[in-house]
Length: 147
Length: 428
Image: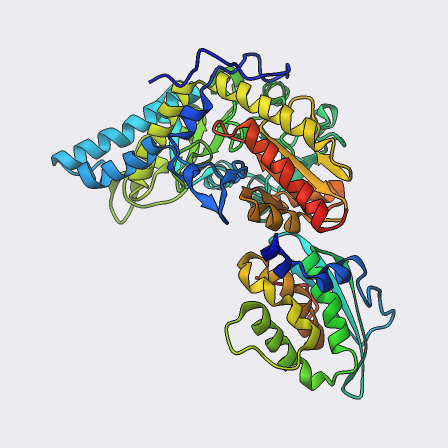
């Protein structure tokens, strides 16, 4: 099962079992739902943005280990970041899970999701929450889908 | 060649749908499927995603190749030998389908792209004169293919879609279905024969009788049933019956619509083009007779011919034998799945066929699917194009193992073993 462990790394299993920032922000400045039509998974993300900085970020919803862990790790990575950096981080994360470019530096823990690149059918699970964050900041009203 | 072995009958506990005991030689059947010899992630392939699509026997693969290498040409047009030969093989399949469904006439057999298109054909054509206030009754366990065409029809015409609910075990509530039929406004009842998400075998004969007693025609979505049980459209007395070639050991890209002749004759064409006309002027077109009226343009010739070979192959084995074998597999799987703590089976109807859907506490179906795949076990994880069924059980998705005649008890054991690996991986 060694190769499966490349996907289901300990950090991922931990964030799946104990997702961080798994709650609702009662009055978010930004909010969006991400929907993966392939499996019916839905993740809601909430942001509290002040002075161009993400003060607080959270998520809720049901998903597989990959989408839950990715959402959880994402909230940790984005908290305290300026909104202006989000676009770069979303793209950088996409590169991590698809490897269709040079692997970006300083993504820290998010690199544990690099194993997803060997499982093309699971890339959409990993990027679901990230799509939702981008949509939230762009103020989409309808749920964004991964396809 | 006999596919039945004289020795070692498979163990079988009685089930409502299977009345015979399987004497099939499964090893011999497996040998006819080239793909079953391959490995997946260095493990022998255990293909349990048959409700999505089944693998193809060599006879079917060869028939398609023979068509293209030996006698392919367009049908219904040429006077040359190849065209005549292709036409003969294509129309010969229509007769095979007629016999397979026990339809009264080949004029009642329409070739489409898949079961979905067959249903869309009926929605577009039969439904073209529906009016505001008219109703279409379906069940809560339909595949999206038997929901969305009716929703589109309702949007176009102002008709209303009514949904008959099912119980916690996955059985249709017949009284509720009957109550919906009683409104006096129902123009069509459309329901699934075997649910792809639950495995439930619906009492389609009774459902048809109840509709007919009120003068309501019925359409049966048979995509999941034709590979598993013998269908007799005259005995069922259904008005329309739809199925897909790719689920019945034939190639993808071909579907069948059976329709009663009188209804099909009265219906307007679905699509216009070549092959569906008798006389065309710029002022007016006279349509061809059945079944050509509903087959505009050059059809999927080689794959239709492949379907004919698939039906011959399946008929030679015998659907009663297939059903008996698959029920034994279902029993074997269900018994072992029930022993896995945290595993919940969705769909426990008394009459069930060839598939088992489940969830595992603490592991999402997608993760189950990925881990099983690494063990060589192919299952489906997701909503199975039946999101309302998922909503009924309050889950986003399920894992589903579905069986075909070539599956073995050992493969079920491989599934169970792989599921224990999921538990190990997720520390459940």
